[in-house]
Length: 73
Ligand code: SF4
Ligand code: SF4
Image (cartoon, rainbow, N blue to C red; front, top):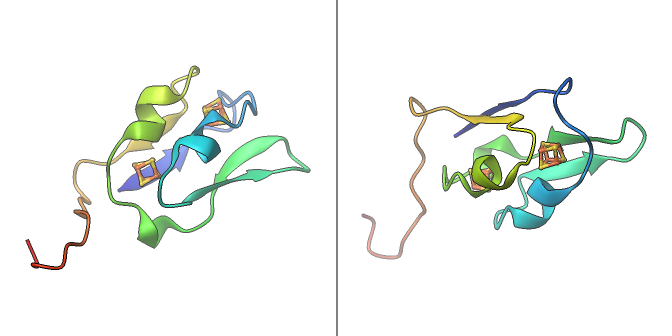
């Protein structure tokens, strides 16, 4: 599950907000930084962490939330 976005590293490029398939990350237009808007919707796919050019996003391996499926696995 997404744990944090380091504001000191974030350059406001917006890549993570576009990458996240669950709409967890939004851009704070005033601060020009990414912010975690809906953490409980995170599926731990780590796409945002991989795509961030500044390595500002940390996905915790200890709070794994698998993608929900219709067959419950
Ligand atoms: S991809 Fe990284 S640097 Fe770009 S807005 Fe997101 S956290 Fe900030
Ligand atoms: S780990 Fe996946 S679901 Fe969670 S915030 Fe990043 S891109 Fe979105």
